[in-house]
Image (cartoon, rainbow over the protein chains, first blue to last red):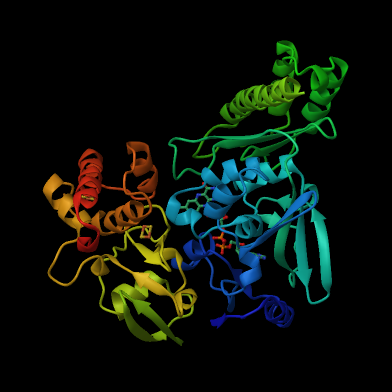
Length: 296
Length: 163
Ligand SMILES: Cc1cc2nc3c(=O)[nH]c(=O)nc-3n(C[C@H](O)[C@H](O)[C@H](O)COP(=O)(O)OP(=O)(O)OC[C@H]3O[C@@H](n4cnc5c(N)ncnc54)[C@H](O)[C@@H]3O)c2cc1C
Ligand code: FES
Ligand code: FES
C-alpha cells in the first residue's frame, strides 16, 4: 500500500489523475473501519488531511461553500444560522469523537442512504463541487446519489466543497434511533421552508436505496400554503393538509426490512417525522413573521 | 512501510515500519509502548481508544497513522506526571467509577477535555461529552459522580495546581 500525502489541493488533483484508484482519506470514520476489518485493501490511500482549504468555508451571496473536510463539530457550532438543517443533522452524527473527524465530503463519498448530511442537503438545496485535473463541475444534489453507496463522482474526481443555499427560512432535522447518540438512522427527515420562493423542500434518509426527496409532498404542501395564503398571513397549516403531507412523505419511501427496523415501521415513522418537523418549522416561521409584523 | 514522527505526551517520538493502513491506536500500543489507550471495537463505537489529537478527542482506532504525522497526541498516560494522578483520575478512583477499568482511559481523556472546555458542566453536558464512550460494566452513575467531583475539585483548586 502507498500513502499519498499531498500538501495542497493541486497536488491532490494531480495524484488522483495519475492514480484514479487512490482512495481519498478524510476523517477516516468510514474508511478506517473498512481497513481495520480488512474489508478493503486499496493500493493507495490519498490523505486529504493536510489540505487547508478543505477545512474552511466561505459565505458568498446566497450560498455557503463548505469545504469537504470541515468536521461536523465546526458545522454545528459555526453554521447554525446559515445552514440550520445541516447543523442539526451534524449534531445527530455518532459521538463527539466522530464529529471531530468526520465531515460532509466523507458522508457524500460513502453515499450511504443513512448518512445524516444527505436529507439536510436535499432539503436546503445544494450542489457538489466535483473537481479533477480536467476541471470543475457542479453536480446538483438531486443527481448525486445513484444507488446504495454509489454516487456520481468520476474516478479521477475529488469533492472540493458542497455549495449549500443559505437558509432563507426555518429548517428542521429529525432522526429515529434507539438512543440519542451513536445511532445510524433507522430513518431520518429533513425539512426546509423557503419563504423567498414560497416553497418547501424535504429530504428522507434511510428509507430508500438512496436519500430521496418527497417531491409530490413538497408540491402538494406548496400549493396549499399558496392557496390558503399562509406565507403572508402566517396562519397555521390546515391540519388535514399537514396529515396529507405526512402521508405523501411516507409514500415517497421505498424502505426495506433490516436489523435496524422494518419497512412498515420506517414508512410510518417518516410520516410522523414529516408532520412533526413541519409543525416545528412552521411555528418558527409564524413566530418570525409575527416578530417582523410587531416591529413594523 | 513508512516512518511516522509525532509528539506524544510532550515527547517527540518516531515509529518505523508502519504499515500504510495502520491506525494511530496500533502505533501507540504496539510500536510506542503506550498500552493505556484500549483496543476494543476498532470501529469508533466504544471510545476506549480516545486520545487527544492536536487538542481534540478522537478515536485513535480511526486515525490512520500517517495522518498523525507531525501532530500532537495526548494519551491517558499523559494526563499526569509519572506516578501521580490528575484530578480527574483521582476523582474516578474516589467515586468508585472504575470497575474492570477497560473504558476508563478513554473516559478520562474525554472527561479531561470536557473540564478544560467547560469547568462547570451541567449533567447534560457531561452526558453529551461522554456519549461516545461505552462502559461495558455499565457503571454510568458512578462515572457521572466522578466527573461532577472532578469539576468541583478543579474549581476549588488554585489555578496553578491543576494537573
Ligand atoms: C461509530 C460510528 C458512528 C457513525 N455514526 C454516523 C451517524 O450517526 N451518521 C452518519 O451520517 N454517519 C455516521 N458514521 C459514518 C461517518 O462518520 C460519516 O459518513 C462521515 O461523514 C464520514 O466522513 P469522513 O471524513 O470520516 O470520511 P472518510 O472515512 O475519510 O471517507 C469516507 C468515504 O468518502 C471518500 N471521500 C472522503 N473525502 C472525499 C473527497 N473530498 N472527495 C471524494 N471522496 C472523498 C473516501 O474515499 C471514502 O470512500 C459513523 C461512523 C462511525 C465509525
Ligand atoms: S477501539 Fe476505537 S472506538 Fe472502540
Ligand atoms: S469499568 Fe468495565 S467497561 Fe467500564
